[in-house]
Image 1 (cartoon, rainbow, N blue to C red):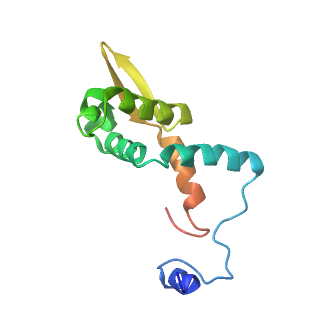
Image 2: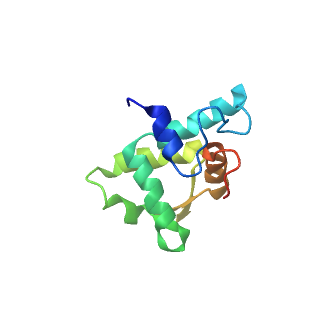
Length: 122
């Protein structure tokens, strides 16, 4: 990263180093809440699980559809899903013996709002 500022100014829609990237700084409680979400997504398996659920037809996926994608045990997949659920990124609904998971779009919208530079369109 020899010229990080130069890289930023070359990206479309990113202003120079003196322009603020966000509307206003996070408050301490906001930072705590958001760090919990980012921490939950900070594992490659969990990030991929989020992607699989979000891209699944109908916007939800059965745990049976998710388990076969990874070379991991069922309990390990369940642990990762629990972390995502406890962070509020997904919700689960039991139907018979299976649990169906769906993304919580309002939580992802909150994350997107934090990451979107000031003045950027949606």
